Length: 200
Image (tube, rainbow, N blue to C red; front, side):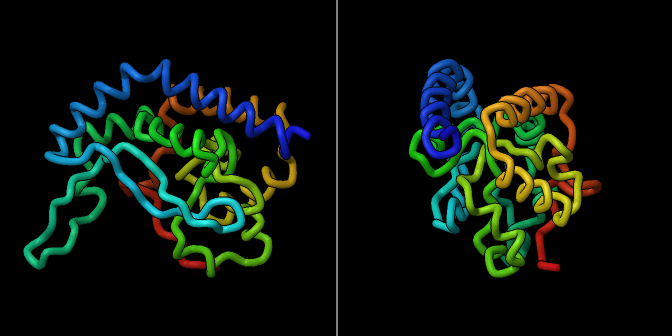
């Protein structure tokens, strides 16, 4: 009953309340990121949701658009701004995803939405991570986030899908708060962002 009905209600009400309470922070970030990025403060990217349905995830933009002499974007590490590092470290870049939760694209808790190009790379077990809506945070995020291997991350995602419950979601929410406070597992070692998944 929780997974099929109450989870969506809790998601909607919590996301709605969260956006209202965080509105002063959101407004400040919109202004300073627009100035810092010399343009858009938001980052939109296509991601697969439940059953692989594609939607556009919304995040605060933490990297600029600087390119090399050939016109190619510089590496993530070189484009990540100082302000962006702070926003990412505090996970404030995730706040706009509350809009995705309101729309029903995402849940507060669930496997993180990854890139569409990964879809054909999953094996039959890993694909189960798409049996539920993706989340702003999830079981893999509170057990290592970007600091663990892809294989471990997918194992944790599938475990969550098979054990979804209100009690587990509350546990993940509180562990997420602790992770954010301690800034744990944000980046892969020696990387500004996690490395790409290339399949087994």
